[in-house]
Image (cartoon, rainbow, N blue to C red):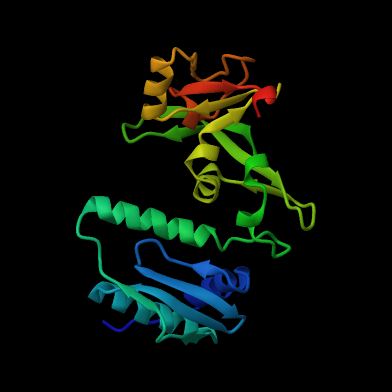
Length: 232
């Protein structure tokens, strides 16, 4: 079947590709393709899964790009084999997302991965009601990370999942109370070592055992070390 580009698709493409900065990465979910923006009129294919469906995806994206005046540079891309099982697919997807996260920049052009990620602060935004598959509703907490750009002093507000991709598990699985006390979630091995040495930890629920303040949902049910300012 011939792929035809309509005006709605062109309008979307102009807005989408125009909103990405020079050097930015675009990797459509599930497409098996990664592109990088070289300049306002040129994108480069940098990564491609070796699969017939992916080849078809690329042909369609190329048609859409060319329809809005964008050239595609290809021939130097990294071709890789499809995953052989769901576990490998998950690992590859996470690695791919982390690679893309390393290219993210603030409005001023400063790479976010080069900023002091350990100084980012997790804060509560709001509560929202969501519709469950059962038809019932549930209330979830919405959180974000706040940090300051050292280049332009602008404030950056980041989704927790995006922060996790940039900062890794250790920084993500910690929370600093209003009094400066840090709750650091422990791995299973660390919990065993803590038990063997009789070092005290604390089981964290939805509120801090130290101040009673809200704790991010990804910290709920974790066993944490309590780190004061003097230990740091």
